[in-house]
Amino acid sequence: MKTKQDKGAAGLVAKDYAWEHRDLLGIEGLSADDVRFLLKTAEGFEGVSTRSVKKVPALRGKVVVNLFFEDSTRTRASFSLAASRLSADVLDFSGKGSSTSKGETLRDTARTIEAMGVDAIVCRHHLSGAAVQLAQSVDCSVINAGDGQHAHPTQALLDAYTIAQRKGLRDSYDFTGMTVAIVGDIAHSRVARSNIRCLKKLGAEVLLVGPPTLVPGTFREMGCEITHSLDEALTRADVVNMLRVQFERLDSQAFASKREYAALYGLTSARLKQGKKGLLVMHPGPMNRGLEIESSVADGPQSTVLEQVTNGLAVRMATLFLTTGASAK
Ligand code: CP
Image (cartoon, rainbow, N blue to C red; front, side, top):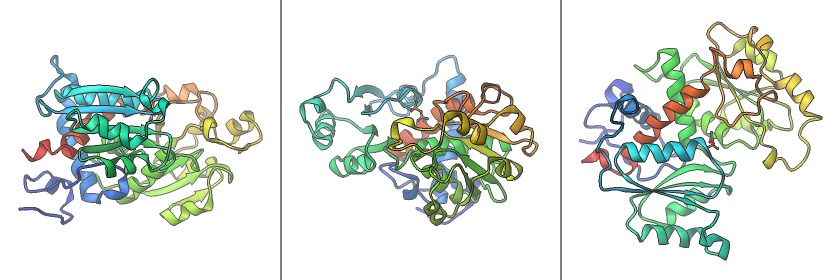
C-alpha cells in the first residue's frame, strides 16, 4: 500500500512508504516526508564506506553517468564513488573535450548518452534550469548536481544529515526550534537556495547574513529572516553555514575589499567565541581560507567540513538507490 501521510522518520522507513521520484532536480520537488525518508535511507548506506569491501550489490547491472559541464571536486567524486559502491557501472563524462564544443546541444548530448542504455544521469551545469531541461529530454533518472544559481539538492540533504547527526536528531529529523544562519554570498548561491528549502521543510528557522549587495530582501519570500550583522547572528544561531564568495559569479563589486569582507563577515576564532555553546560550523567547500572562514575555525572541533564530505557519500548512495527505482525491487 502506498502512503503519503506525514508519519515521522521512524514511520517513513516502513516498507509501505513509496518513493515516487524518478529525478532529483531540487528540494522543492520533495515533501518533508520524502526528505526524511531519503535521509533515513542514507543511514543504511553509511556503514558501507567503513567496511573492508566497500561495495553492496544494490545497483548491480545499472549504469550511472556523471555529466559535468562545470568544475567540481567533492560532488563529482562523491557521486562517482557512491555509484561504484552500489556496484553500478560508472561513466565520468566531462563537458570539456566533448562534442558540446562543436555545438551539440545539452538535449542531444543527453539523448546520445541515454541511447547507450543509461539508468541515471548526474548533471552539473553552469546554467540554472539545465537539469530540468535535461530531465524533460530523457527517460532515465536525472539528478541535479548543481545548476547555476538554482539548486544543489544533494548538498542541502547532506548538510541536513550532518546537522541531525551532530545534534542527535536522527530519530526525527525534526529541526523545530533550531536556528541556522547561512552567511555570505546568498545571492549567487544554489547551496543557499537548496539549504533554505530543506531546512524550512524540516522545521528550522533560517537567518541569512551578509552585505546587502549579496543578500537581497527578496529572500524573505522564502520565509527567511535577514541580518547584515554576523555578530548578531552568532548570538542566535545553533548552526552557522559559511558560504564561499563566488568571485566567478560576481558581475560588479559587491563589497569594498576582501579585507573589509573578512572583517565584517569572516568567521574567526575570536568571533566563534561569541556563539552559543555547541554551535556547529559548516562550509560546503571549496573554501576561501582567510576570507569567509579562518583556517583555525575550518579545521577546529566545531567544524563539520570533512563530515559533510563523508556524509555526502551515503546521501548520494541513497539518492541513486531511490531515484533509479532499485529500492522498489
Ligand atoms: N560543495 C560542492 O559542490 O563542491 P564541488 O564544487 O567541489 O563539487
